[in-house]
Each structure stands twice: as structure tokens, then as C-alpha cells.
Image 1 (cartoon, rainbow, N blue to C red):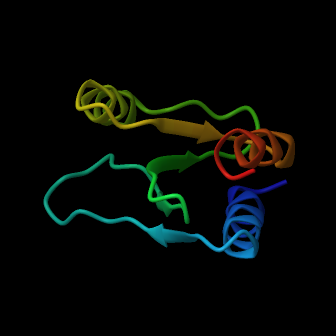
Image 2: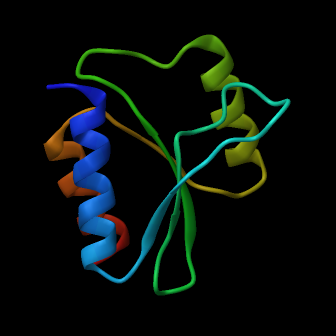
Length: 92
């Protein structure tokens, strides 16, 4: 399974529940999470997608910690099962 497939499932499941999983880029700041997930409840969370068995790079870990220190939730998803668990936690 590839990261791209996991990302497609995330986008599909969030859209099905009335939310949006926007591609997130921040010019000039490397290492930001892949997706900004907007939920119909008004919640905003960040999602970093990884292929199974892959880990966050040091810069990605730093960005995750920075966002969490500001009070945001940052999820790392590396499988279809992880996407399902994420959806159950935040969207159902």
C-alpha cells in the first residue's frame, strides 16, 4: 500500500461526512502536515500521511510538536485501519 492510496481514502471518507481534507502547503516552511482537515462540526485538525512502516522525518516531528503546542491536534496515518480509527474519533 502506498501513501497516495491512504490519502485518497482519507479524502473520500472526510468528504462523505460533509468535511474537506485540503492539501496543506506553507511556502517557506518545510515539514508541515499533508492535509488540513475541516470537519462539519467546526473542528480543524492536521493530518500527516505515511506509507506503512515509514516514520516522521525530524523536521516533520518538529512541526507536529509546534502545532500541538498551539493546541492543534496532529494525526499521523499510515494505513487504511488508521484512517478508519481517525474517522471514528473525529467525524462520527
